[in-house]
Length: 171
Image 1 (spheres, one colour):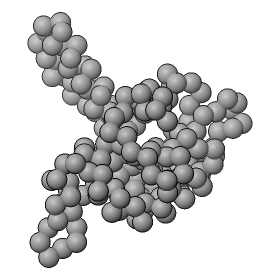
Image 2: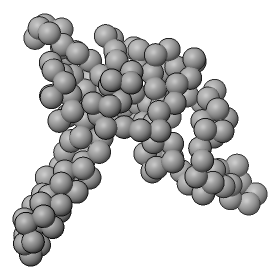
Image 3: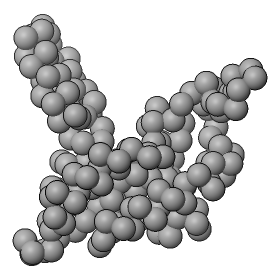
């Protein structure tokens, strides 16, 4: 899992026995990511069913106090986690791919967390899909850094076009 976290450029990694090989990261950011390599869609669903029982363990692992502060008279965090359960499915042959309709139905169900299934054949494809689907802001940051490095003026039309593409991908 350490190699996977390094490949995906993730930090703040937490492992919980209850998650059966999955890891949690970004607890102190706006997106809490739970990531697991899978061979069946049902593995992600089992992971989702485990999450409510881990609420306190997750809360204890959060360093950023603003993310755990509760609103008076309510048992809700001020900060509502944007939780993503991500199943990574390595495929070597076309017939190993999940049924697209099953994946779409599965991802539409937002009970407890947003679910994302990434099917990939190699590390490069995994990294590209991950950045595109889970952390699209990385693409924008790279673009902005290019402008800074080149000393160019920002091109609002180009940035707006890229933001539109990111929006389309995220939806």
